[in-house]
Image 1 (cartoon, rainbow, N blue to C red):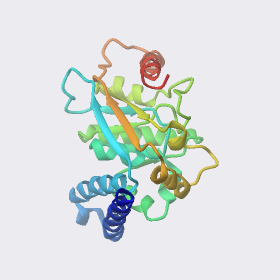
Image 2: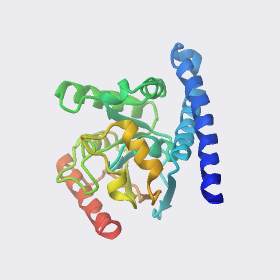
Image 3: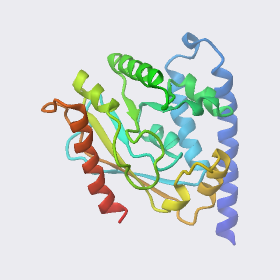
Length: 249
C-alpha cells in the first residue's frame, strides 16, 4: 500500500513538472526561430525525459557497441511503439523523421516541429523525396538524424523489408548508420496498433505490469563497401533479425 501511494505521488509530481514545461515550450514554439535558439533543443530533450518519467517507463540504454559512437551518424531503429518518439530523443541528440500525423497532435506536434522534428507522409512519394532532402540538409549542417527504416509502426517483430532512404543517405554522405534495437519487455502492451489512440497508448504505458524498455546500441556501420542501397538495407535488416532472435524469441 505504501509503495503504491509513493508511486502515485511520484507520478503526480512528474506530471506536474511535465505539464508546466509543456506549456512553457508550447508558448516558445510560437516565437520566431531566431529567438528560441539552441536552448529549445536542450529543453525539448529535457521534456522528452520528463515525459518518459511521467509515463512510469523504466528506460535503459544497453551499450553493446565496442567502438566509440561516431561524431556524426544516421540513427536507425525498429518501430514497435509510439514510445520511441520520446525515448530516442531522451537518449540521443537527433533530429527524428516522424509521420506527418504527429505534427497535428495537440501541443505535442507544435513542440516537436519547433524542436526540429521532420515530418513525412509515407504514402506520398513527393513527401518522401522532400523528407530525404530535408534530412540531407540536416546532415550537411553537421546534425544527427533518426529514421525508422520499417516505414512506420509494423508491430513487435521486424518487418519484411526496410525502406532504403537511410541507407541511400549514408552512401551519399559517407555518414555511418548507428543501429539501435528496441525491446519492450511487455511487448503486446507497448505495441502500437491501428485501433489505438495516443491517449489510450499512454494509459497502456502507465498501467503496464512490466515497464522496462531496453534500447540496445550497436557499433556504427560504415557505408564503404556498399554499392547498392537495397543490398545495404537488407544486410542491416538481417542484423535486426538476429537481435530479434536474441531478445524477443
